[in-house]
Image 1 (cartoon, rainbow, N blue to C red):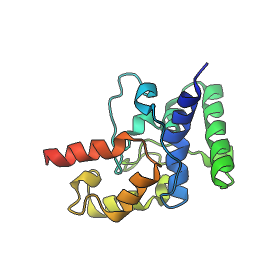
Image 2: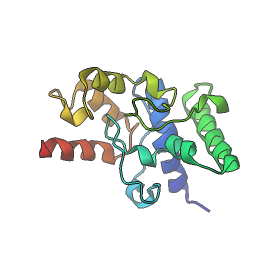
Image 3: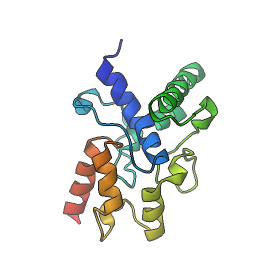
Length: 165
């Protein structure tokens, strides 16, 4: 059985980011033990979103690639339930759409990621991620980091990329 922190981190990475985007960058706080309870796709490495989050750790992405349909449904139900309960945004199972990652150009994209203002801005500027922006870290991105909607390492990832440029 998973610990409460594991469950919380599970929800932060998927539902927390999605709900943060729904509410304009206001999301739930991070877990102090996030680095200890990472959820990753074995051998998948990193797929860095515009905001610095690692998409391969996102529960919405993990539900997308899950081949066991019963487990996939359970994952989506948990995400939908969490968003509804904690953010007051009525979310149904069918609202948790497939996602190939935030930076996908022709693939599947989670319905709420389509509304993300950070994603929109970076795509309009033709950036790989926000670290490549001359305005890094802008007010919008700083507000997202401060809200706790993204995993704790997102800013560190972008800072490291920025330092190498």
